[in-house]
Image (tube, rainbow, N blue to C red; front, side):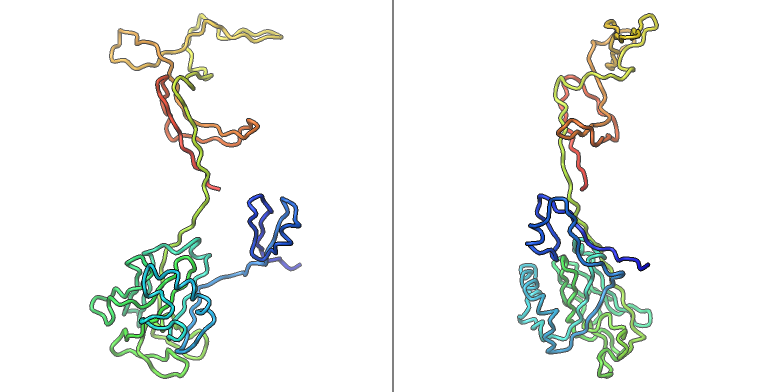
Length: 321
């Protein structure tokens, strides 16, 4: 029996949210609570790198035109066509990172792209300005140090590397399919020859980044106002007296003794003077109820909070959804 692949699904809710593959007519005709399913997940996912030659006019880059231009307020290097070049014509390396690797977005300032030749670091890029510019930061004094070699789309997971300056004085390799030897440049980054046309055995690459995952949270406030929540049913709340029975029971009744005395726990600096009585409780947990007064959750405090009759507290609770 063949094993089915996992698939996307979402129940129809009042929020009217649905998968992109679900048509409007299909959504409207479905009852609330109906499971709306999408296509199967792939079994695996990996970072890919596409090498685009000059005048490529690649559909992937053209699809990113509006996205790139929308980030121009961060840096002019995002502009699709400017004095920095036309991205539909430039030789470049397009690195695609699936969202499964980073979640909601790539964290700004966390990207590091390194290029090694026979184990020695020859160049490194970082987004040190946190504005999407991938700037060559080292090694110190290297050719192109301080220059912008490309940009990163944090939310979409793409790196566009267009840097064309030489990164090494003597090393060359067959980075393009014409098998001509070229010096290393950022536009050749992650070229491992995996397509079988040409090999770069002396080069190795490392890319590092942190991901951000945004989680919806529900914030709730619990109020403990003055004069409230100052009584407890905990047996330790009353003063122990072996001569007084706390309750009387029979076959058809249970009566609590009205003479029970509440224990005075007010602190005093004197051992021979009884302090003035004050009702004090300690709040250690908060019950969360639904509209029908059903207990659905309990929030526990790390440390109990002392509640006097003059105290007024607000407890802030957050629930990850």
